[in-house]
Length: 460
Image 1: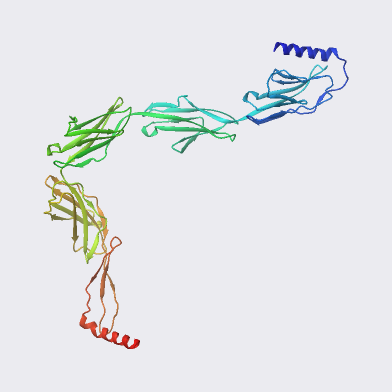
Image 2: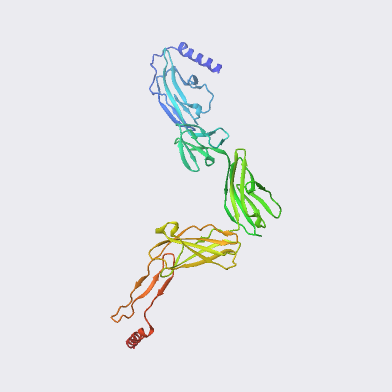
């Protein structure tokens, strides 16, 4: 560099002292411009000079001399002189700034113009912290940040699971719970090149949340019975099983066993005894706390399931069907029904249906209700009883009754062929039932004979 500075000073001295003044007035006719070019492009900075004569043309970037006359002072292969213009190839971010085209002459103030170069480049993003992960406790707040570069200044958006959250280089999450855990993506876009994204993964620390997959489980003597629960927690929890809140259950080969699969945990009785009936608790524990859920094992029948389809059998007669699981024979079913217009405790009609079946596992039953009022809406529920007790009441099923329709086929003065009645079933049934046909064979026989005789003569 010292060599080039000395060279420049000598050249300047010779040009101002060692040569006679030509008397010509050197001018730069180009004007200073603001150039905007993309990263990697080639750019030509213009500087048209009139009557340069023996004066020396300089190109400078800030205070640094790039060229002097026809000589390159800065050894950069990307720089090239095209006449008096400066060409920069394969633009880099360091090329941005101010460029002076200057003519050294006898004047006190050199003739010069100044260009500004702005490099446009695609966005680049990086997470803060650089690890891309944050760990926070439940019920706290956290601010996620994303570092961004790019020209023009990029627009930054935040998304989670494909859902747009907000714009800006940072996002604050308040009152954090376990559902806030996951990947947060910041995406920067400035219209130059492709958008760029960074991901911050948030881990939420929280005490165990325990749910019973089946809060009530049907138990049977000699049966294999499985109790299961789902446990969500961070950090990973320890799982324990209890009977009646304080009696911890331990695995015993051939009698009961534990199994865990990520968030799902189970306690299996390989041959259940009646003494195993009772309340069980699945409990999860970690450094932030504990949680538990209750499972009731009982020999009582499960809650019956009443079918939605209630079939009409005749005037005021409707058949209800249901099924129930039980490991002991069902002794009786109790059916309750009432009109929905009288939703009071006293509006129920209770029917006890005794059973003598020895069917186990699933019991299917149908029962026909009689003397129901037509054009009314009814509600029906069922509970079932076995040796161990009565099941829970089934979920209610609603159905509507309706009057039968009368279609008259023939109405003669003698009254023949009339009042052919049929019942049309509701939308849930495909059955049609015929009732009260008043015609007799002796009544219609003469008409049939005449009909046959006329048709036979016509064809003959």
